[in-house]
Image 1 (cartoon, rainbow, N blue to C red):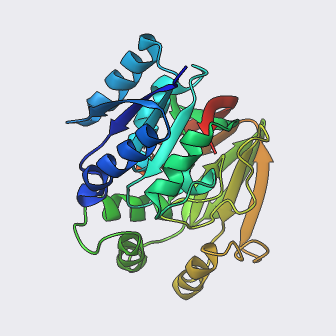
Image 2 (cartoon, rainbow, N blue to C red):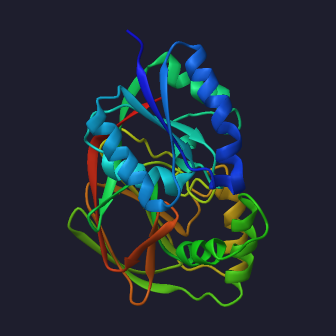
Image 3 (tube, one colour):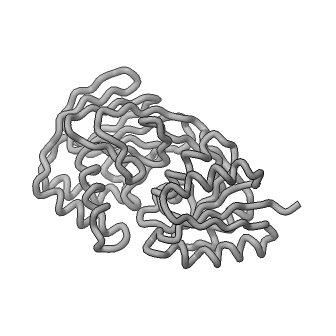
Length: 290
């Protein structure tokens, strides 16, 4: 019997990339013998609604064409449902797809993972009653994220580089209390990031070495450094070679609380809310084609 796949498309992701690659992906899935039902979103709320309808419909799996923000919305419904979840990257950062090993610039190769049907379960973080698929950021990086979200130029991940340079001009270290598994750490820091996977911001390995199915949260604290040193650290994030720098502290745990006055936390590139935030782990919450 043919597998029935719901293909949920965010046509606006990647400045229209989602709409452009959707027919190609649909045809690839259909050519492999899958029955494909295409659903196009018209607003953010559509993602969760359509995902819920798919789960209730008896489809065998859902595949989403979009970026990290779209995937975040879909994960709210698909978490703990047991329904396999395919991802065709079409966003700016694509950090979730990167974390599970999906090809980022080859939608046909990404579709072939759905056709192959091999799945694995991965962890999700939880905070403020939502599931988080990548990283929670609080500090310099969340301010960069806010600035990048408001920019229309440049395109792609280079937007984060420009936002970083702009934010660096006025940023000063912040005071934090970071509590990992009940043990508080009081520290000044440039940023605190907590993730289930290693990357955010279009491939920056802020939580280098993080494993998405080990049942643990990875915590990175960058303690106060000069603006020049912070600027020098950011290119190292692309390779994960910042780990080991004297100002970089890494920890693991099953629960993390971040406190810092006046700072908004970001999760999966979108505003999560004002700190403090309590972050937990939902082991094996999402089943993905990978």
